[in-house]
Length: 635
Figure 1 (tube, rainbow, N blue to C red):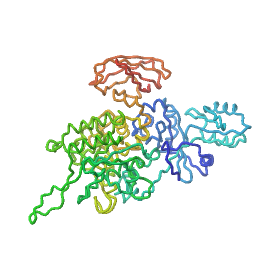
Figure 2 (figure 1 turned 90 degrees about the vertical axis):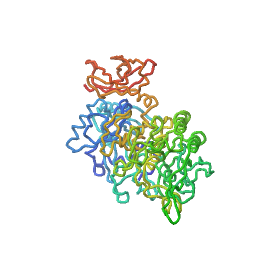
Figure 3 (figure 1 turned 60 degrees about the vertical axis):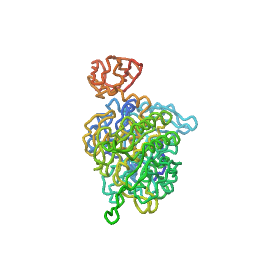
Figure 4 (figure 1 turned 120 degrees about the vertical axis):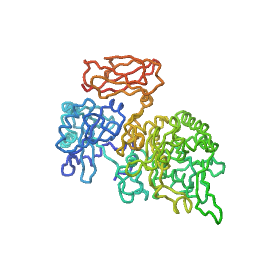
């Protein structure tokens, strides 16, 4: 078992004793139903969805991303294997097609294009390099310290990495020779309640309520990349957080009481079960992991900043001897409390993320003692000015009325609105939906931390069925913390777009509307949150690419006879554009021009003399803004 934190969810390296199994068929079996495919680097940079195959040749075959360029492809029947390999090798955007092996212990190994050879002093390195060239294998590096030779296979290589490794091992002048392999490390946590946390890893077990296996945020795979970072701070703006909770203390930073009661973020201690609300939210986002107790949070090495912004009061009318009812608690806050909370988290705590599991239905907003304009302005300032101008990611729960979004989740330009999904990848029955919903996250009957002792929802320190968009919101905030731990340069908007684009289209919903980040559904937004896919996508979204995507779409891609430009941004409407099609070496071979028309799609006819292959489409606006996208021609 491998227990380690990795820079990539798949560990790519030469594990020499283990890899030798490839040369021993009795110990390693070729998996006929799987292939590993590498996409050309330029194409990978232009391709963002992780819920569908990256090239037309894979349509109909189950595929999933292993990294920015690597895809694992499933084959329905071994008889289809050879024909699919031929199709893939003929694709202009596929650079390598490799084998998948399984050893006797059940570990699956992906044979990758890199190859390592350690020569002895008797080896004629020049002859070996020439042999590699004859076999279609590229030599690209020799280590100056130990003499290790680095080679690279491609789809045009005349021999497989495993076969060449077997050939070289039999030669006395070769100390060893091994292909580079990828495998899935097991990132284990020892938190005893983790098996109950279906939101992180859904096994469909009875203890998880017989959910749908895989209906989760893929936390274990995400942890293979990162478990968060102590430098990433999540503010929980809520009823306060139990700062003495043993599963939260390792990750807690000094808090704040925005209600003026001086509790430093600790909840009110009273008769209301909901006083534990903020503690439950905090645990979902970033409860400590691998500490041998309780649960584990999504970003379990990031930090929690408790901010008490509201508290619960009893509104029940009790007349002794006439009316005898149970407590009816509702949260109480004011405009000042909200402003204090947001501004302190932004300016004093200097947080990266704010998780807000609260709001007001729009029909009640006129009757609430809240000034939404003042709060909206504070939210806007946090989103645009926080984090040194990169912006604080403001997550808000969508509401629990099975209706339209509540405020401030509906303040769409500056917040990230989160609905709730069930353990079967369905919209939770109560989850609010509709215009401006960004995505959903697990939020129905999830395990979390509770106010310790007799207070809170339970008599213990944990709650087994914390439900609502209040639960989904901190899970999304924790996922955002994972992304920021690998991309601290992201702006709040780039972070939102990364989470949207990597969300899974689950549940059988229509997703029949088109938003700026792809297919969208009124009930699910851009889909169910996927932490692993977000981390795979994040390295591809450069500052320039993430910013420029909002301007226009270019489709279809791959193209044949024409392209369409569909403008997304209306801010460029007064400009004209010019565009060029360039070869990969920068030579312009076609050009076009026209006005920006946000309400229309504009067709570009492609010249007949263009050959199939990969090109750059470079568009320039009058304000000298340049956008470059990759285009595949499949004539």
